[in-house]
Structures are given as C-alpha cells and as structure tokens.
Length: 252
Image 1 (cartoon, rainbow, N blue to C red):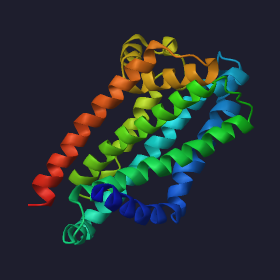
Image 2 (image 1 turned 120 degrees about the horizontal axis):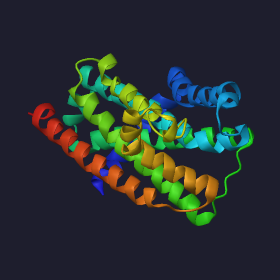
Image 3 (image 1 turned 60 degrees about the vertical axis):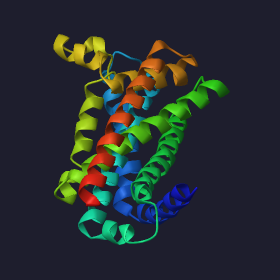
C-alpha cells in the first residue's frame, strides 16, 4: 500500500507540472489534432480511401501519435529530475524507491490517456462515427492504457540513461517513425515490398489495426491478441531494463 500511496503522491506533483506546461499541451494535444486535420482535409483527397472513411482509418494512428508525443516529455522530465538532483532528494526521504519511477509512469499514462480522449472527441466532431459497443469500448480503453503503460516504461529507461534532457526524448522520434511505416496512414499494400514486410510485422501496425477494427467495425480480430503480446513483451523488457539501471546506477 505504501508503494501505491507514494506513487500517487508523486503522480500528483508531476501532473501539476504537465498541466501547467503550455508547450507540453501544444505538443501532446494540439499537434496531433492538427496532424489529423491536415491528413483528413489536405492529404485525404489524394488517398484512394474516401474522405469520410479515411477519418476512421487514420484516427487510431493519431491516437498513437498522441501517446508517442507524450512519452517523449516523460523521458525529458524524468531526465531533468535526475540531472537536477530531484531523484537524490527523493531517495533520501522515507518513501518507496520504485515509487519515484512509478510516479513518472502513472503521470504519463494519465496525462496521455486524457489527451487521447480530447483527440478522439475532435475526431467525432469532424464526422467520425464509432461502431463499437460497450465491450469494444472497454477493449479500446484497455489497449490504449496498455500502450501508454508500455511506451511510458520505454520513456523511463531512456530518461534514465540519457546524458541530457534533449537526448532523453529523441527515442520518441523513433516511435513516430514506426507510426509512419505502418498501417496508420495508408494501407500497407501501397508500400514498397521491403517496407511492407516490416510494416506488417511491427507492433504499431497490430495496435492500429486492432483499434481500427474495434472502433470502425465494432469487432475483435486476431490482431488484438498480437497487439497484447507485443505490449506485454515491451513492458516486461523495458521495465526490467529501467529498474535494473535505476537500482544499479542511481541507488549505488
């Protein structure tokens, strides 16, 4: 119970920083909305998919775009705490050691989840009509939260090992790159053969396809299980790496 209490206490501290940061809100909420509007109304006319259908087609990618942008700030702020000695002060206090990392992860998951809700609402305002029922909506929420959680642990790892604030968030560009080489913005069938093979078998595609099937068709697919396996694997690997580095280097 102490770990959860300490984690939520630190989450409250960091949520205040996130909600008061104008540049964070612009990058994590406003920018994905602008990207969605640009693809739908500027580039959408050049797509083989009708514009109305393209709104639902692109929305899952924009939701992941929102999360990827948000976890970049998580890595940045965690590294900033490390460099400014905040971690040392917390470690000298009678609180759970792992709560310091949990606070950043919980903040990331909560803030990014709220951001995805805003993006989804804008998608509905511009004409997207979800076909999901209660069960599918629960699956969508679970998938978004798991994606948030998995990518947040990647952010924590890079935030710990980075030598500077700027380099801490560089990994988020790799996540955005994976989004563009996926089924997020165009069908993978339109990609060159080599890129298509990569796009079809990387985690972003499975997550996007699962969300798309749930939201636009109201159905589960095999991709949902594949996405869960990817996310659980990513979480286990990067949580282990982050905790190992934290205990070995930060608490020595």
